Image 1 (tube, rainbow, N blue to C red):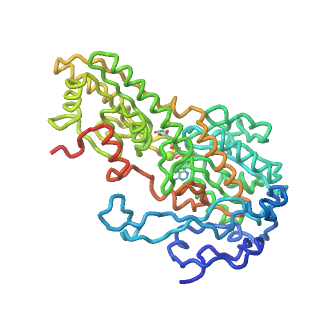
Image 2 (cartoon, helix red, strand yellow):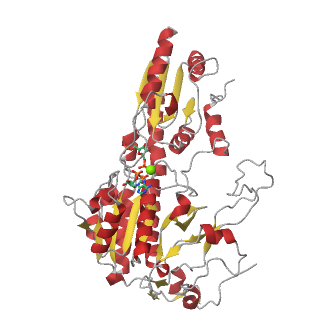
Image 3 (cartoon, rainbow, N blue to C red):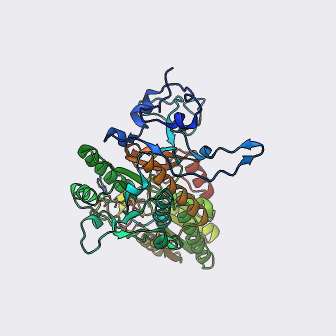
Length: 485
Ligand SMILES: Nc1ncnc2c1ncn2[C@@H]1O[C@H](COP(=O)(O)OP(=O)(O)O)[C@@H](O)[C@H]1O
Ligand SMILES: O=P(O)(O)OC[C@H]1O[C@](O)(COP(=O)(O)O)[C@@H](O)[C@@H]1O
Ligand SMILES: [Mg+2]
């Protein structure tokens, strides 16, 4: 047993709360290695000041004097990352740590929220916001909320970097000054108010610009790639000992960020994807021997496909990148489709764009960010189906629906609006608290600050042995096309 793992030299929480020393928790060395956060104090000498972010005191509440400091999160507040205590290593969903251990070892993440002590005078803050990678519902909500929250602290200078990281070096698209007034209604539409792009100028050039423009809070809204970029930018800043914090806000419609319950826009994407599946079902069920094929996004992670399939309940076959499949032979997909059509007169297939790529004759190369450009598995699949049923002289009416960009370009639903607002607020709280090289995520329904390196170790993918994937294939009733022998 030792001291509470989060306690640091710059921890002023207990002093301000006047609540005595923090509670003592067991000491877990892996916390320090993995989930502690970088702080501005590691880079430069800086003294904290009292936060101006306060609610108004409203007098007594139920006979108790209200304490306006109660709105602050204590620096030692933490969230347990793994919450299930597995009774046996054969229990479904058993998680192994990096040492191959399955037994419960608590690992904590730092709880997000406003701190009582901050490391920037709001009037000295110059913030910059960038959105990178592909679109995702909710981007505008996050931009808007970061701007609003910065203004609540009293920040007057906020730059919007246009068209992703390229906006740092593009003289035709110089940064724009963002204000609450300017961004007030942007959450009502999809896309990114600032624009997005893939590809990146040399990171040194970005850091030079950040320094030249006196930026001291840098908010990167993006996925795995953008977070890798943010990490590299942080490393440069730390080396140069800049008084600048780098904050990530995870954006990925594919929901492929490690450790997080989910990322913003994902629920909206599932909702929209389900509408496409239902349309495919209606089309197919209204035709003689109708076949509906829907392609959904998911470069390497089949989350949208899995969740939309379960949500719809009208899917016969679901295919995701994590689970290989075969088309031909007695136990292949085509033969199974034939049986479904002969039995029910309909077959609905949902396929994630990254599924079965190894079977396509595709050498699409890489996009500007280094992501593989995928072949159109939906078209390939549809052609295979038409060819097979044509040869078998079984008439079918096949419709292929590709709603991918329509899903991505949507404005988000109300739960994602709320989710994005909370992420945006916490991004600003974390920046003022002096944390850097961190991102914000929902873990076990609590908002946490997480070190960027921990969330980009590998992309999050669907576990074919998980209960959720089992639920998914139970909902379709499909057999295993993976190992048909
Ligand atoms: N490993 C990396 N290091 C530095 N920057 C990266 C890295 N991977 C991607 N980027 C940059 O991050 C931005 C977004 O990456 P991309 O993969 O397109 O989207 P996402 O952030 O959604 O994954 C691009 O400007 C890209 O050049
Ligand atoms: O057409 P684009 O912009 O290259 O985007 C396609 C990719 O973008 C995504 O929607 C999201 O990818 P990112 O997280 O890298 O932005 C993937 O699902 C898809 O493969
Ligand atoms: Mg990505």
